Every structure is written in structure tokens, then in C-alpha cells.
Length: 200
Image (cartoon, rainbow, N blue to C red):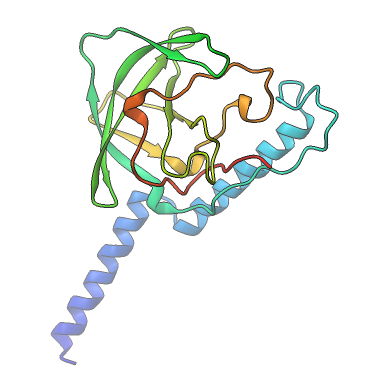
């Protein structure tokens, strides 16, 4: 192989490594995976020991939560589209009531060669951004009423959606809790095989 070709291959590999490093937020993939695993271990401890755990009053054995393996493909930098004229969005809940949120904007991205668009809501009380979604794993491998993802936005033109951090609402563990269901526009036609699975 000619030296020029070797040089091109070497430069290409360096570029790939740099892109991968930048995409993971300045972390190596290994560091990122370890961070996700650590967060999951801490959540198991919280679920077993905290007074705020949905299992707090349960007499049943508390089992570890189930997850998909961390996958960097599901850490997605999406295009953020703000909503200018914001309005109240009422989401139905699992106990047939309603929860109110403020529509904040849209996250647009492509996955599996399909364009996706998700509505991001803002909790009116504490101004936390909130994403409820369903996908093709719902009611199969993941909780049937959808999963949640907490997101942050710095006011820029992009927003990070890390589906490895997707979690079940508390009503997945106990019928005592009221949980909002995903809005219709957030029911994805693709499988999001990342984050938390159905609790067994």
C-alpha cells in the first residue's frame, strides 16, 4: 500500500476518534458507559432505601431495575425548534385525570433513516423540561404507558436527548401514583432500545 494511502487512512481514523470523543461530551465511550452504569447503581440504592421511593410502603421484595446496555447511538444531539406562542398542554394520566404542562419546543432528529419530532414540555410548577414518549418497544420490552426523559436546554439551537437515561414513571411500580401519558405526537414508530425496561 502506498504511503499516501496509509496517511489518508491514519488521518481518517484520527478524525473518527475525535468526532466520537466530541460527540460523547468530552468523554471516551468507556467513560460514558461507566457513568451510565454508576447512575443505575445509585438509582437501585435509592429505590431500596429512600423514603421517596415508590417502593417505600411495599412489603414485596425490591428487585434491581432492568435496563438495555448503554448505547452511544442513543445519545442524540437534536435540533431544537422553539414554540413562540406557548400554551398549556393537558396530558391524560393513568388514573383518568389530567396533568398540565407548558409546551416548550420540539426536538428534531433522524434515527434509523427516519425523521423524528418530539414535543418537549415544561413543568409549570418547577420549570423542569420533560419528555414523555412511547416507541415500538412499549408494552413489549418497556413499560406500556411510555417512558420519561428529563432534558436541559441552554437556549441554543440544539438539545441533547440521551435515551440511555430514559426511565419509567412511578406508576410502573405502584398503582398509588398518577402519571401523565405521552402526547400523541411523541409516539415514535421506531424502537428505542435504550434506557429502562419493564420492571419485573
